Figure (spheres, rainbow, N blue to C red):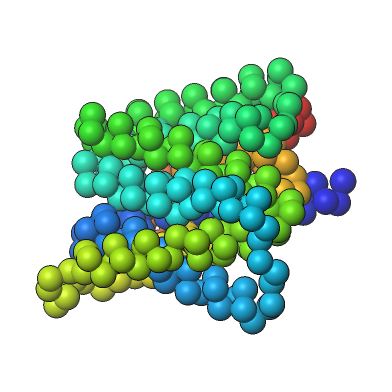
Amino acid sequence: MQRNAQGWGSGLLGVIIFSASLPATRVAVGGFTPFFLTSARAVIAALLGAGLLLVLRQRRPARSDLLSLAIVSLGVVIGFPLLTAMALRHITAAHSIVFIGLLPLATVIFGVMRGGERPKPAFWLFSGIGSLTVAGFALANGDGASLTGDLLMAVAILLCGLGYAEGAALSRRLGGWQVISWALVLSLPVMAVVALATLPDVWSGIGLPAWLGLAYVSVFSMLVGFMFWYRGLALGGIAGVGQLQLLQPFFGLALAGLLLHEPVAPTMLAACSLVVLCVAGAKRYA
């Protein structure tokens, strides 16, 4: 019971950290190209992760783990950051919430396929209602749509769900922060080459908000958040803890209200309450 509670607590911290990822990416692509932003954030996080691995003298992953680490890299280090950065040039951050609401379903589907989990039928009911609630709320409050952006987000969600599930299964053997650190190190050579090839021609025109966005997605979205998230999935289960992602859009809107003084509509509070109930139901039947 204590292990499960620790997993849900760790997963919740990860979701809170991830909540600012899309807004930060939206700001960052105002100054950087999607390819440079994706590669630069991966390089920065990889250097930090490599430092942790060296200082704490972590053992190297086995050869049998390399394929799983490559899948994690493809999903959460390269695929999701790149595709969302490209999508956010076509759609608003608010509209992207539609797809973030579908991420828990993608995660649990790959958790069943890759992690061997078998949730009870009632779990799928609560998970589906929660996802539809988030998607409906986002559609009602979104103000931008693009077929190109929507397709990019759809593929990003699939890759992210795969990376989450694969990383969670691997975390049971290597540890949560070790998995994301090794995945980042594995992708470092390719990402370093891409970063050098896509360096901005002019640096003077890049504003402070873009730099702050890059810093956030590099340190928190790419590394710190995953330390908590993978630990939570490994301890509490992919299917159950994965449903905490349903709260991510609402945390993001709450942050926007507190930090950017944007209005918070009563419909947000109602939708968030229903989502919390769905998360509680999914936790019970996971």
